[in-house]
Amino acid sequence: MIPTVIVGAGNMGSALFRGLSAKLGKEHLWLCDVHEEKLAPAEPGRRLTDPRRCGEVAECILLAVKPQSFSSLMETVGRSWSKKLIISIMAGVTLRRLADDTGASAVVRAMPNLGARVGRCVTGWITTPAVTPAQRQVAERIFSAVGTSIRLDTESQIDAFTAIAGSGPAYFFYLAELLEQAARDAGISSEHSARIARDLLGAGSLLLDGGERSAAGWREAVTSKGGTTEAALRVLLERDFPAILNQALSAAAERSHTLSDDAGSH
Ligand SMILES: NC(=O)c1ccc[n+]([C@@H]2O[C@H](COP(=O)([O-])OP(=O)(O)OC[C@H]3O[C@@H](n4cnc5c(N)ncnc54)[C@H](OP(=O)(O)O)[C@@H]3O)[C@@H](O)[C@H]2O)c1
Image 1 (cartoon, rainbow, N blue to C red):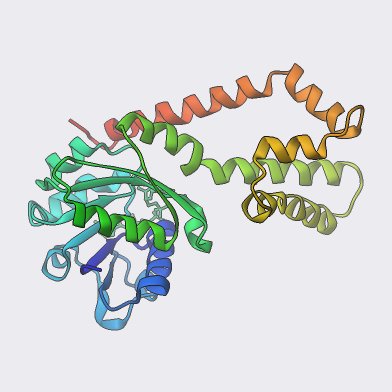
Image 2: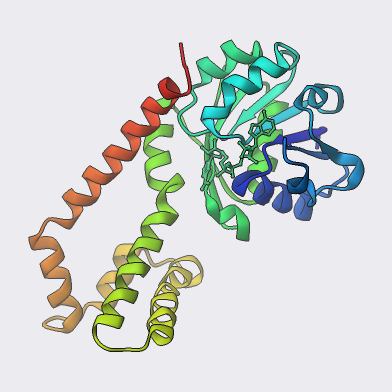
């Protein structure tokens, strides 16, 4: 592991830091945030509040600030990271923009998700051609430390990946929320409704750890002919739920595509 600093110790930065330090050790890991109180997960000597110091300690800079904070961060650090391996998890910020603004040629654009908090993250990533095999290995080790690492082929796949996997946890939470509400509407206590919604999503565990069966395979397995589940799924199909979901995913992918403009892209 090469010396690495995570810049931005918010939801994702701190989750990545925790996952990385648990799997790879804290020895080569620094954490940087403008808010000192967010740096607690790092050893006292590995906490930075001034991003200009990152280039002094690390060879790999992992950018985990909001896309909207990127411009001012770059104003602070200038071109001091141009010889570093830059790994960005900022939604929507393109490889070109990352390379232009940092001056670095070795750049990885990645999209993890909230699963990083529990070591169940799936990260899709792409690189500039200048990234060496050794640097790709660094990226691979970082993403594998918090879950599954998937190297994508094109930048447009990152927008689709962002819509599906980056935002994906929110769709599960929304489904849980709706099921919880339905249980409350049926007169079940709030406490039990919340419990039902949580436990139903245990279906995710079956998909992960329940053998080779696919999502469609599990759905078929629990849908008896003429049964209750089939009645519910028929309504979802009649109302064209797949088309609604695809529209939602397209909106998220489009937003990923335009986020870079919002953040002041060229
Ligand atoms: N949340 C997700 O599920 C998710 C999933 C995939 C990817 N991402 C990406 O991950 C990135 C971080 O998201 P997040 O939800 O973790 O954001 P967050 O909670 O707002 O964390 C970002 C942290 O960086 C700090 N910061 C801002 N400018 C800085 C600077 N110049 N130097 C050092 N620290 C600075 C922020 O401080 P202030 O609050 O003062 O700005 C904040 O503490 C985003 O780019 C997002 O697109 C997020």
